Length: 336
Image 1: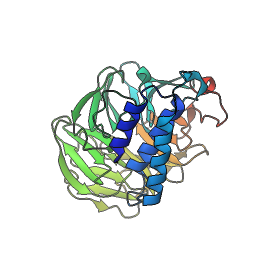
Image 2: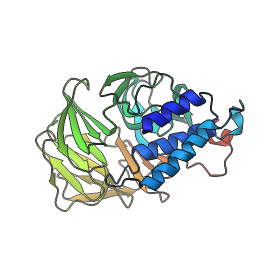
Image 3: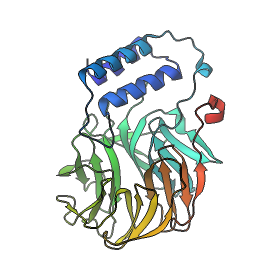
Image 4: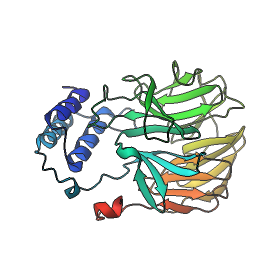
């Protein structure tokens, strides 16, 4: 039985599972589908797949008590994307358990949707692009891979644009007439010139984040976790940038001006990708994972504890928008 078959079986077997079962099946299904988001060469052993499948079936077979408050909310899950809606300046965070509005230190799940949101970007007022996987309890889910989906109402509803069942984009980057996406299954950069309705498969390389700017859409930057690569032909080919530090995220808020997040938490700036200057550093907590440049001065970042930070002085100082949730917090304390 494949991954999609397991999820389908779960939905037919017990469509009213508690949140605890939802969290269990979501995590196991995700880990079977892509066991490592940073190491594409890692694959689970046959024994681990069978063990995980057995646990998933057991979780799905559990009777529904109807007591939804007894199980904790799974929270945001690992965060993959951040953005600001220009319609009202609300900060949004995209994670394994949905898209969330951040306000007053709390993450509010949008429309009670639990889709596993991997790639995420804000492209205009109330307009988001995303990718990933549907919630395991979504009755309308047709495939384990969302492809490219778009919302024009700030994440309340989503429409499929393309590649449903084919693409799992872990990074999405709009660059004027071109939309780039890193498709995690093939480890290739895809490019679209019709707003994501059709795609051209381009270079293959392991990466964590993409950057490009509307004024120079043929120049594409890729943070690999070990360094930086650059393309000058629209992601058909990439070359390593000599002297670049180990970067986990990169942004190009102005044409030719890069801001990046290093693996050690430093916030760096560069004009050519080779010579970098330190602007600041994320507060010590978890490993740095996400960086979004709303503008050259206004930056959002997240780490592996799912803490979300904001800087309004180009990364020199940071404030916490959403703190890490203690493991022993009650469901109400986590997400009221």
